Image (tube, rainbow, N blue to C red; front, side, top):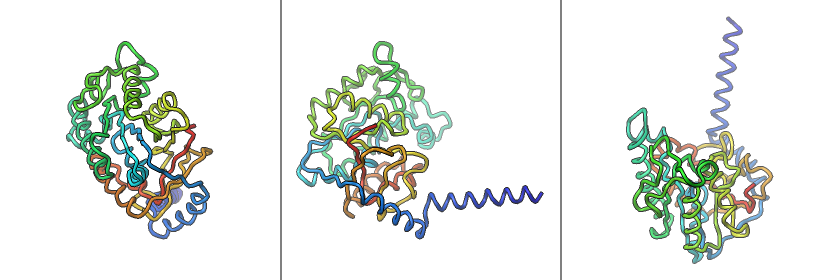
Length: 309
């Protein structure tokens, strides 16, 4: 009996310590800040000028998580910004279940979630100052981009098990009705590159833990010259970034999955951090479930690497 009590006590202590480490009350956050500044301040500083910037966003909200500060700085310095969303975020089952109050969020529920998330993305981009005619949606399947490129390059299209469709189902996208194939996806991406003619492309790293992010990163490496590419990570490893929640006074440290890459820091002003927060808050469907994770990206800096892997 005493052994059982000791085990329960040890488990409780471990859970309390984990909660402190992850959520960081003020004194713990101070400790993170002390350590992070020693490491992050050693990174070379990235500067942005009047670029023709194209941000590659696998899902609505990635553009704000990774690059809200970079977007603002390019616009302030006379550049232009386009955002390209590869999916409409219609594959987040928990989110669709919550939005539609159903335990089986397939078909209509998932498609309605996609419509909602595109609307949220437009609002976030407006808060960042990106013109509405510089927002491009492709509407390919959430959690299906890797399958399109590797298993369905052409011919019979991929069918999403959540939306139950095998083609782009949304209006207001680049190619409505395009089949879910790698060939169609690659053709649309090349069309956007030709249209925008970007001098700088911000893409997810192929090291990112999310399969859609890895797919977009590899596609970018195949289609964009290396000197125009910079990479970012959002899904960077267990519980990264720490601490969770809103800590705009702390630096953002490189993710565990990005270890060994040559990271550069992009410092953000207090005003830029405030606008980044406002852009993230526009993604209300995601904030309902993932606020602690998303808010952890509102930091003193953003991080980019000239190497993807």
